[in-house]
Amino acid sequence: MRVNLITLVGAVLIVLGIVAFAHRGIPYRSGERVIDVTSLRTSVNSRKIISMSPLLVGCVLIGGVALVIVGSTRS
Image 1 (cartoon, helix red, strand yellow):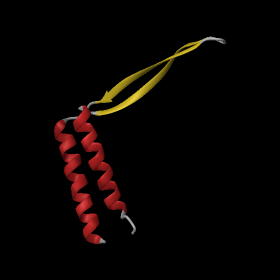
Image 2 (cartoon, helix red, strand yellow; image 1 turned 60 degrees about the vertical axis):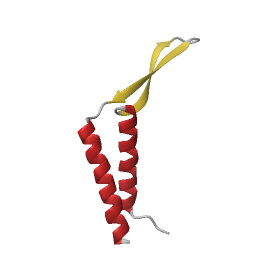
Image 3 (cartoon, helix red, strand yellow; image 1 turned 30 degrees about the horizontal axis):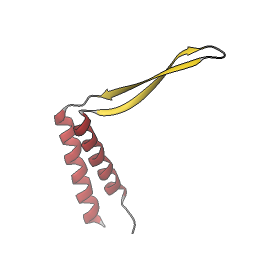
Image 4 (cartoon, helix red, strand yellow; image 1 turned 135 degrees about the horizontal axis):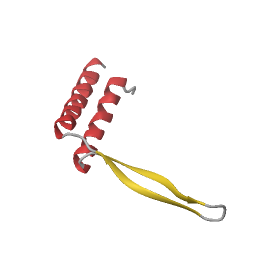
């Protein structure tokens, strides 16, 4: 069974939309090297969120569902 590219993109958009709704944005981790001495290395990992408008997230979800429907009807 071969998956269409349109259906795959739609599924990815749906997953990103659900994650954005759940976390009020798209979370990611950022690591920064604070101290870098020959015998001592310290880094700080911080959690950051790309905030997104709920309207934009809703549009992403609707677009993903539309792509999945179009991709499944073309098969």
